[in-house]
Length: 438
Ligand code: SF4
Ligand code: SF4
Image (cartoon, rainbow, N blue to C red):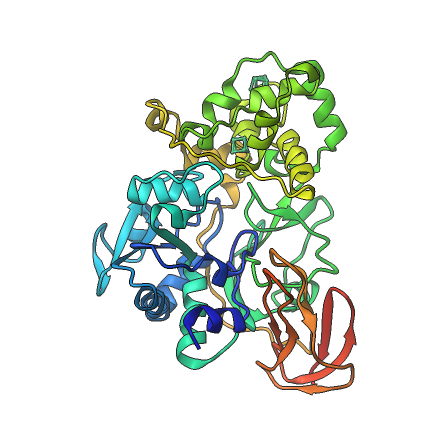
């Protein structure tokens, strides 16, 4: 079996972010593999701990991809403080042709397009894939999962993640996919106060989740407990209708949101101030402008850092994006773009970003948890990756061993799922398979 098939069969998706199936990123023609250990979101330390504890596996996974696709070098991208904390230096060769790449401590440097530019000085054309500039990107944990799949034929059944935010001591640990978050919190004595929420992901791009009923997914990097009254959470709790009304009444068209947009600073034709104006001035809406919404990475800089009128261009753009996605419309361009000469001065220092989000008091370096939770049951999601949902291939009542395949990949972009624990299948629905330990 070629590596691409092994990776697909192992059910590997991006271990952070949207959950894009990893096999679909792999193709001939790359000369550089970028391993993303940047963790550009504030408060996150999962990849830092993973790199500290499991570096040989990460390097092994990188080598497997490099060998298969004849990639001459890999760069393990990290921010300055992570390089220092791991006792490494910029440019250090960690293993044959795998080097440390230190990136500036700015937000959102972990965004794929920004990271590629910072690490290689290549710009992915708007709407194109990284492979078009000879780059494949994978998260550090994804490389770790690839090593296990290639060397040990082990599918993804566990997840590395952290619990942080308003807790005494943030922890990083791993647990079976499908573990109940409520049970996890009970095990680690985590209390969620009534005036707090739980985020799946970082404070900038993570989502508020119904933690009492949610489970750990393959792309859960962090569970953060944060108060409802800080800017990071207020913006997430603001109703879309309120955002639209604010656009209509408050926007002075100062263009600050466009001037600070990290994608715009790379030369992408993304102009949030025009998107905001489109709410009231429909006559100015052009198909090209709307399509450009797909180029937004959702970083939130336009909302939290740029706008002083309480407007969220990001929310308006994400509404455009939903409509475009529903209709399968993407942006594509044949021309190269060039970064703004002002980019270096307009990038947002990470400390400033943290403070604007209101999360500075919660930034404590996480440590590896001393004990690991062993759940009595799991509910494996079938539809939490990009692409078609996985199709169950077991029956209710069947006994399974950890690692057994329980759902096949669907046609097209999709991945299979595997049993995270030994047990008995107790329930199968369209979106999950429940297993109880026996
Ligand atoms: S920064 Fe705010 S006020 Fe200025 S153009 Fe953008 S949305 Fe309008
Ligand atoms: S969220 Fe705003 S600042 Fe970030 S990429 Fe999208 S438009 Fe630009």
